[in-house]
Length: 530
Image (cartoon, rainbow, N blue to C red; front, top):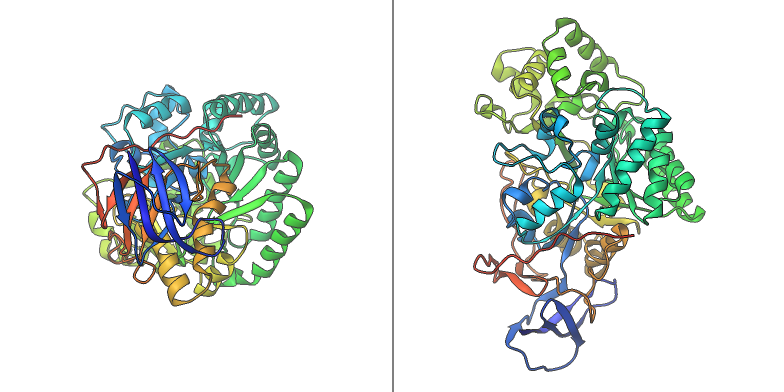
């Protein structure tokens, strides 16, 4: 069945100047682009609207949600047609049967938990088969998570890996890359990833480089030691030959804004040296993750069950308080750089603490009539560490500065539980509305490039991210004059306005601004192969 989008302002994803024309779709492919009239079974008149490639979300936490709610409404309603799962080094696979129970607890604050899901899939291939069977509405890509690989090879202990354990990790990683993972992710503030030495990461990245994969990294510090942290990441790229992609690039805390010039200098030096470096960014001054990261790394040694034991131990609580108040060299101390007044709870697992959702840590403690740290520890214990949070750390000037960098592409990085960060629903329309139309930070063509082809190049994704003959027909049609995000931190669960039509492999999944529920979901699990 042929479809033709006519009278569109075509922004092809390359960064080239927009032009008026038509796009002919036959099946799942674009077969013609330009100034023509064609016979088609269906005509979509896009007069006054822009047509762009489907947006690509390079940092998503839909790993569990894509199984439970494969329609992916928070993503497809903002024009996203492809997303990358397996982020921050901790995700759903690989997951040996012996670790299912402790790993679910470790993962819950980031990706959620489910009693409905059968967790016995074991490997990335097993997980991706489950994902494919769920028939997602958008395309799903996967990164092999370092923490899962490390867990399978050596457990959850807080120690350096031996040479033999690194070899086991490399073997597990090869299996996951052979299954189609696009690379390796790590999150060096999350357990057990944080326990890895630089040398461990270099050895693993040598394997990733063999597959022409990406090393996608939440670096060890985005705060006090961000410069040293970047130097570590660039060393990994230099010594392994891997292509580096920094997750959610930023610097946290007013006292650390002085490092921005040095961070930019390191990016320039890496480019001059020939190290391939890219990064993604969400267009907000606040981040979101699991609340457990506010605790010092040693508290997580051995996994969530050990953490819960320590949260009950008065001596361990005193030590945690001391470390949070005085700091640990190299550790990103969220309470220090953001402040308890600027960290807000977004989700909990049980009904007991639902009243805490939307409250700052300070407000939550007052509500519980407890001192701050006692309230924090009790909440994490009662919720078995399954608590999400938002933290405010930056400025609009820094968002704009990093957005203008050539390495940058757009992402959501949104946790989907509870009262989420508004980026889950609005990252891409926010760029087009706020930073293109209203503030003119970047041009419309450059913004679309950063949402499409730049993202595809960053992650090694083929035949998507561009309106081009022979490419897959992932497309979004939007009104550049009205598009914007609507979600706020107070009321985040709101779809954007201005997205008119979304096509996934040629199937119109959003029509006239409404999800086309009558259409069969045609998203694919995309696998990268060597």
